[in-house]
Amino acid sequence: MKFLLVSLAFLAYTCWASASILERNLVCFYNSNAATHTGAAHFSTADLEIALQFCTHVIYGYVGIKPDTFQLMSLNENLDIQRRHFATITALKDKFPYVKFLLSVGGDRDSGEHEKYINLLEAGRQKQTAFIDSARDFLRSYNFDGLDLAFQLPRNKPRKVHSDVGSAWKSFKKFFTGDFIVDEKADDHKEELTDLIKDLKNTLRADNMLLSLTVLPNVNSSWYFDGPAIADSLDLINLATFDFLTPERNPEEADYTAPLYELYDQNRLPHYNINFQVENWILQRVPGNKINVGVATYGRAWKMSKESGTTGLPVVPATEGAAPAGPVSKTPGLLNWLEVCQRLPNPSNINAKGAEAPLRRISDPTKRYGTYAFHTADEDGANGVWVSYEDPDTAASKAGYVKAKNLGGVALFDLTLDDFRGQCTGDKFPMLRAVKYRLL
Image 1 (tube, rainbow, N blue to C red):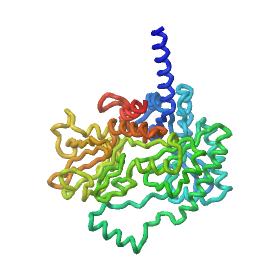
Image 2 (image 1 turned 120 degrees about the vertical axis):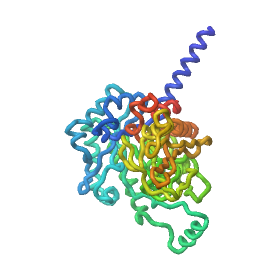
Image 3 (image 1 turned 90 degrees about the vertical axis):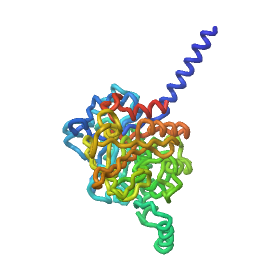
């Protein structure tokens, strides 16, 4: 009898644990461009299959919209259509039936007319219907389970962290000039976007398709998203809660790019943190189980000058924009997790000098702000680097925050910037694994 009770208890726990696993989202963004890369940056379908063991949703990025008709279009037709990459990815549904595959429109990939997505909102019902019908047909044609809206909407204006004197002058000046207006028609655009989301969901519902919203970094949610009005029409809300500061937006000073909580010193902006962004949606009565906290698999790297000092303590002054590109990501100011990991002290670089010198890692025992690493500039002003980044530990901490707040899950941006081959420590997808294990 005792054995039977223990067995029943274990079975009950197993069922509860399985339900918990299914209820917590791990949304994996997949940059399809990585399939065209060569060498260490090439991300194959076999690599994706490894990741799919951990993901609940995969969001294929990205498609765009035509500026005249607003119909969906491939941004890499040679890959997506001629090489049948859309179909290759969604065919994985047969092997991973518990994973939902969504197609994302926009992101930062859809170049062209700067105002294209605002124009869609202002285009009127007829052209919005053309967008909706095109999206539905696109999803049907390539067997996707839903659509993700990652619209390129106007971003907040970058702001420098001022000294006390500078802050006082800024406040005095604002008395006469008012706040910087990014979008004078934001209220109208919010209503138009609300109507578009509702109409889109009504159309997709007939095919039992999902609708996801991704809020890109530095897009002010209060300007464009009416939480109570759109929550019922959305299955997922992915908050890209990182890149609050970047070398491109903030070339002259470096700081934490994705702190979990507000830093109260040095006149930092109170909304440049994850907790503020999450609370902003919760206070609008948006169900927490629809909110996924975005975690980046990369770091942002600034070039330090001789005037940046030697402590590395943020806010780091007198930086000179983006640090040189890494050998794999090849993007100035951005280092993927593998590139950061290989720059930290290890037996292969312990005695290296110059551009190959190891970075000094500074951890965050409070788990509130993040980890950074740096190398001060040489005497001639060269080789200075400061990078704010996520690692498996900080990613796991943010997954723990998600559990504590009883949110929907984590959105990982993105799989192709994780160490998907395990080149640094031997573990493939260490960021993805760390998040998944913490969510259990």
